[in-house]
Image (cartoon, rainbow, N blue to C red; front, side, top):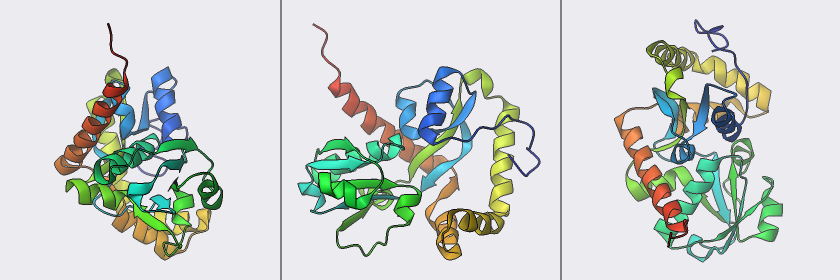
Length: 240
C-alpha cells in the first residue's frame, strides 16, 4: 500500500488492530485490519484472501505461567490484542479446564507474574522473550492447532459492506502479493527498525505467520468465532 502499484489508492493511518476495529466501528475508517474476535461484535464484510494466521507455533503470542495451565487461577493480559485474549480464554477453558480471572497489565513479564499466576504477552514483547525462561511456556498458535487440527486466524481485513467493492478486494490481494514477493526486503527493513536479529524476523515472517488465507484458514476462524459466541452468549443475563 505504501510502495507498490496500490500506493495512493487509500488514505492510510497506522494503529494497533484493536484501535483499527474501533475506528471502523465509529465510522472514522472504512476498512481496517480487524482482530478476528471483533467479528462477533460488528457486522463486517471480510476482504477474502489476506490476513494474519498461523499453521502452528506463532511465536508472538505466548502464555507464560508459574504453574501448569490447568492450575492457573489469575492471568495478567496485555489487552492490545482482543483476539489473543479470547484465544487464551478458549484454550485454557477447553483444553485445560481452567477459567482464570483476567487482570490487565502492561507487557512486562516480571511485573505480570508478580500479580498473577500467568502472563499473556503478544507482539514484539513476546518475540523478545527467550523461550528457555524457567516457566511453563505455551505458544497459543501451537496450542490451537494441536487442539483443533485447524489454522488459527488472528486478524482479517474487513469493513462496512458498501466499502468492499471488487476493486478494493483486488487491490488488497495485489498488495499482499507485492509484499510476499519482496519479503526479504521487508525482513531487512523491519529487523533494523525494531532491533531484532534478521534471522528471527525472517523465521517469523516466513515460517510462523501466514498472510494468505484460504478455505482451511476460514474454517479455523469460524470455529474460533463459534467458541467465542457460545461463551459470551452464556454470559448474557436471562430475560424474564
